[in-house]
Image (cartoon, rainbow, N blue to C red; front, side, top):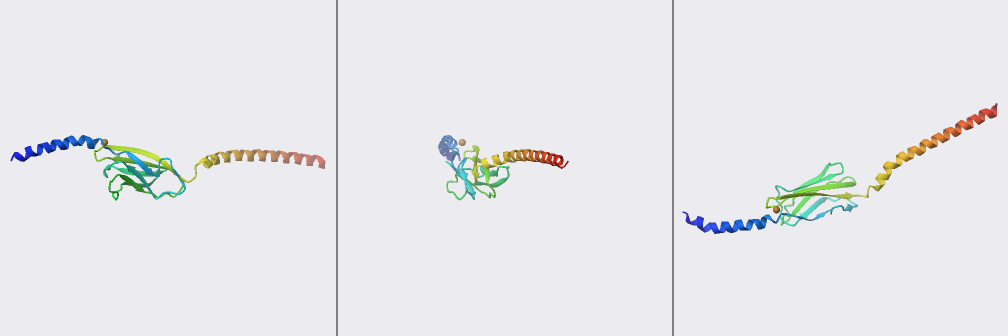
Length: 165
Ligand SMILES: [Cu+2]
């Protein structure tokens, strides 16, 4: 039966012609929560990254790590979102600091994009930088204080010895 093949051929050609249009529509990041470089007072319970088009769950993932590189949460395409254009990771953050989000987003056209961004939980670390410098300065001041005190005691002892002669 050669006939159906000839009937289907124009439709196959139409499908092939439509493919390049779909191929150019690979997913681009639209927004995230937390946003890149955002500073939060309290830790979030999840990290959500939204794209402009549907993602392939097989090639998409999201990983959130703390400043030491320890993973605090990971996930993939949120299948509850009808458009399937959202990556979601539940996260558990027990301390303040910088967190890094790494994502890869596979489009249904097969292209996989990736990226990363950071956000912060808690106050800025300027106090921590000052704290690392202070102990050195402090111990230096204590050392000079001890030196001056021992010199003063030595002088006082010599004066006492001289006075008692
Ligand atoms: Cu693409």
